[in-house]
Length: 303
Image (cartoon, rainbow, N blue to C red; front, side, top):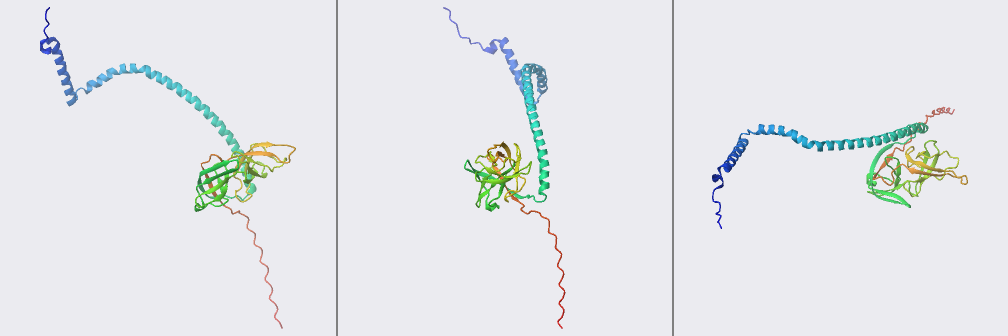
């Protein structure tokens, strides 16, 4: 059997036809790298190559880009339709509220004309944060982080952004307890803004409900009537929103109406309330000065 001797010829020198192009290409590559690194002669070449390759890159990305643009267009159309629907609903609600505010403005003018100069205004206010809330059916109270060190006093009125919240029932140096208008032990004098009828709204133990138990069957009260403070009692000034009537039940067998109202203040959601100081001075016309009595005639001298 013939023996095969191992190949001992060098790769490059023995096969000149295969090794020479490799050497030339390697030297050309090294020369190009050195020229590009030191003199930057290939920057223009790369720019032209990138320009020439751009159409091919664009053609490769065009289907994906077109599909993404189509999806974005349909999604934007859906978002715009939903936003237009929401804006139309908000516009309708705002127009209805504006109509209601116009009616309330006229009623407010009438009330101001009736009160003339007896209104009390806010002199100072203090924001108090609610740190604890007791909202069970027998106790509707909150604890705030302001006390006598901040000027808080017993019986002080507490409001939020929508209406009357309650009043201070207990006060300490750095905290105070506020009783809500929905507490079963709380009652607030109110009047119907539409007619001026006065009554008392009492708490029911539920944050979203007040009761008006002392209006006779002949009283002019309707659902959606606004209840404002009447100013009687000296705690809350007149004209501040309290609640809105939600139920009026007329039973001929009972002498009084069954009326429920919803407080306008967010009694179970407010994180903070406003403690206010009102101007208690009621402007009254100054009494006219009475004419001074005539001076007494001097007594005649004794003879």
